[in-house]
Image (cartoon, rainbow, N blue to C red; front, side, top):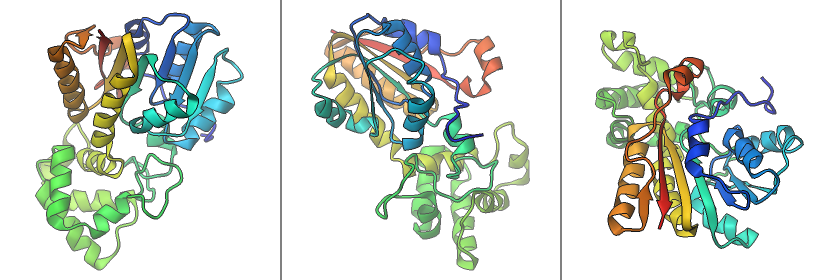
Length: 303
């Protein structure tokens, strides 16, 4: 698969677009461009009017959109290489004070999972990087640094806290034991270590035995929870009155942060919940795109 092609399918696309309640002159912020699914549909709905700002910290994602989508869509579009935690800087640079609609599609795209070569998937043998950034500086954290240098207790805390992995202590202990013999450099090496650490019955569960550890490492490398909390606060601050904020989350940690933030805004009387319970994918969507099964959409309107 070429780096210029996307395989990512936007989750709950119709529900997101409906929830945003787009108007032709809207200024819309897409905080997670990814494969460009939401962005394309948003531009289509605006029909050449309004403005769309697309953020992504992965330069490859923006390059794909620029190559494949820009020639096909009629849109006043600004693509910016930033994490949504820095959306204020992006808007300031564009001279935009307020936006009318915001959408965050959390987690990791299929492009990053399957084609990035950065070690997000335990099903491919790749370097242990797990950063959503394409180009890393020396100061940027990566998964190899975590598994090879962090203390056993810290490793266990991360794997349990961000992965809800019941065997986090055993996995951390096995990681520390293994790295004394040889530096852990690839995803398959890490998978084998996890395999040795967990009980045999755990290897045959529906969810792959390495899933939670890989999730925990990815969240840690990219400070995903910290980014989300910061992005939500800054996004709501830059959202105009009557504007809508849609967030699609994929695991319990994200869901908890989003739910809590929106609930607090409602309590303060600064927003209304467009949907009181999260919207989940239909059985048809899950059948067509199994990775959508854990998606949950929440939408609020600022008052």
